[in-house]
Image 1: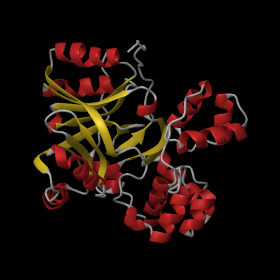
Image 2: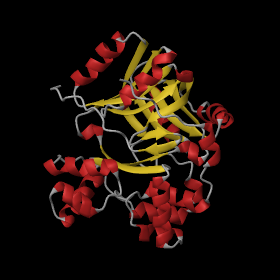
Image 3: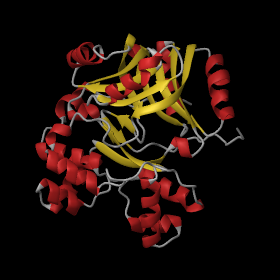
Length: 359
């Protein structure tokens, strides 16, 4: 049995674009400080606390944003890979849906007019990864080719505020105040992962569903006191063992052109170019990887004209880029913490978790 892929309708995009400045300011504030108390956010934005809480609730119910916690793959023994699967157009949606239902698949999109499925896999073992990439996908009759690359270094893409297109809605002082309110703060030392404890899995499971879950909820799930769970979560976040992220329904914010950029960069300039790319507000994710395209990025622009201007005038001017392939996203099936349906974020269904095997 196959699962239908949620679709983004043009009608939804046209009717329900978020334009209220206060809503956009609240979204940006939450990007900077995902778990900050509403009272703190309200004080910084000079809005009533009740207004901030009410508008956040509406934005979440309407599928505009979703805050969630995620364990850092580098600290849990996972191996992040990005994969492009070229397949017959009439089978791409079914394949994307099947992949999205696995919780070792971080995100899934349809590209190339619906004939390419692109996804990221974070397997807990090399055997799980190899089974999918070297046996199941290549042997599927509808799959024409598989291109897989291991992610070697993240430049941007592991923080809730990585996509900076909304930065202009807050002033410098407001931004600074919210960064101080965030965990980890801007003054925190370099992350040093801490060993995971048995209760951490319960904490992570609750935060995966709601990144703003109360400490009382976390304490009940982990079987510890609120004070202890508060300290433990602080340690996980400050050490980089866990981070908070945010999914946004980009089309509902008026950003209708998402694309993956595959770049060939001179090895001597790779790190410098990746860092420069990460500083561009349109870039939500950028990483060095193996393969002929050794730098990959996910960008979000308002429309195709904006995407063209961005890639030619800004990305094209970066030193070190020798080749550039632009692959527009046809449809987003699964984001890091949610599925999409008619342009809105929805709770992921029950997923299939592959049985752990020794690496």
